[in-house]
Image (cartoon, rainbow, N blue to C red; front, side, top):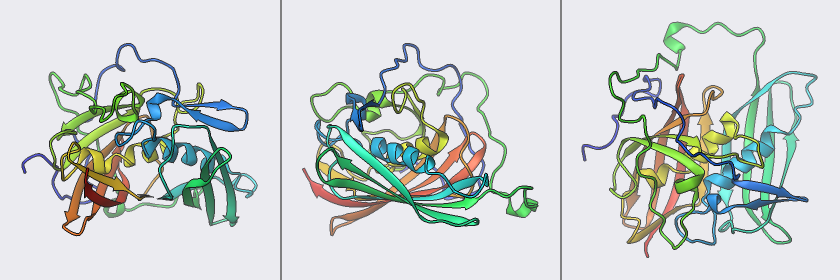
Length: 298
């Protein structure tokens, strides 16, 4: 359709990196606030399908934060998360939530961590499993042919990405939402309201929890759940294309506050689909993400 990125190799260089200062007037109200043993979402966590439900990226980031906090128990050996697999068991409401995580497979080379998010006093609505590997010290040698990252190409002259383009239009009555006020989006190709592939840069527009900024890992999870939204195959206003899961596969640890999605959605007449994204940061290729979709008319 003339709007999406090409089908180059996973290790292709990142292009059109965003430049310039943060958006003027950035505010500090967080996406979640801790109250006792719960996390209370703000309107900045709201999703596009229902004003009373969260965008999947907000709780995905919260569980990534919880997973990263689980001790490795390896006497100082640092572990890196290489895979995050989420399953949405139901809509995540705009209500107090509880989270928990535990190391279910200890080890010095690789580990499994499981986490879950529940409505306070209610059912579990999101589960996640993370695979993490030990970080080599000293580093292993990496031949040039095996390197997955490359130099970041920055456009010269006046940068059209220096200021954010229009954010996602809320589908309901609310004037806040994860894609509107929770995250900052800069489109290289595509947009929310024109179906087709898209290349988009993301960063958090506010703290994730209280005054705590999202970590690079949490940011990847938060951004990856936008794949089906930025590369929609159908119009938001006429159809639902909701993901029931999210899988993030990383080839290295993410760095910095920017994540890029090169996203493409395919659907079938049976009402099923797949949104697949290539992930990058300002240092180059980062990994992939995928979302299984159910599709139906509104």
